[in-house]
Image (cartoon, rainbow, N blue to C red; front, side, top):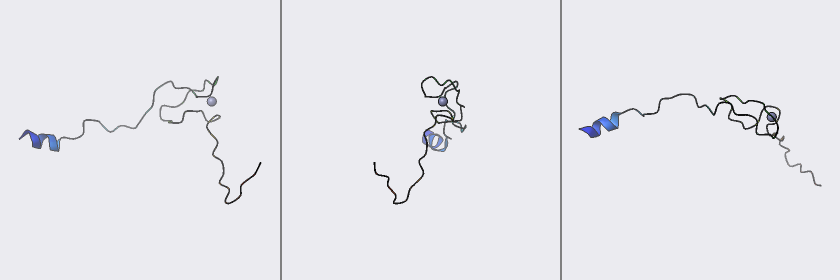
Length: 62
Ligand SMILES: [Zn+2]
């Protein structure tokens, strides 16, 4: 009897948007830019890692 109860029980966790720690700051040393709770990035807009453009078949050789 109780097995049925378990099976039909909704998941205990309520669905809420994922948030991150409040008051996080940019991971760059010395940067005190506060990141949004909804921003999963570790760095502020200024310091976030640059996405390098894809260069199709073109490799620069040093
Ligand atoms: Zn920063």
